[in-house]
Length: 247
Image 1 (tube, rainbow, N blue to C red):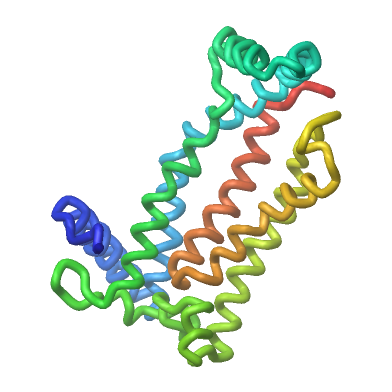
Image 2 (spheres, helix red, strand yellow; image 1 turned 135 degrees about the vertical axis):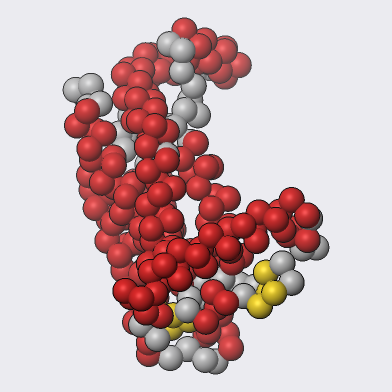
């Protein structure tokens, strides 16, 4: 089933296509065939700029969770034999503090539709019944609709594709490592997350985006690389403005 056959979604996809084509045409005299790649990066920056207020609320939520951590540990120790009571008391604590354990998740959810749109724009040979001109655009000689895994499966993987996708994956992985080092999670004294194996698994989650970039078109990979770099820079700045309480 093609969800973009649904008229509202088809219209949204066509509007996104028209906007990206218009921006690429505007940039083409300056950067040539890489215009669409630069357009994707600029769109990413625009999306992230619109999400700055959400990022601020995310930093405040992280600060609040760190402040509540000692009280949560007290509740866990007091009611560890009564899970239902522990859940009630935990939710009451969050309610009293006018926050939520899920606060700060919105940036990830808000970006999902944008990633989906870019993924679809560089995957379909036709958009709203007309040829998809975006597929003719390239980055360093690699079509923006090319994915590493797709090219490998077709037997068409070449050196330019390896270099372009490898660079994107390397950028995401380096940013992930910097993020892991700069924002190490607090290790609980006990519980399922206290084991070294659980901590290694949580650390590995930073690199899932890099693995994901191997499966999506180069254009979507550019979006991912740009957004993780923005996220790291934004978190560093906001951590200074909203520091966590001393341990």
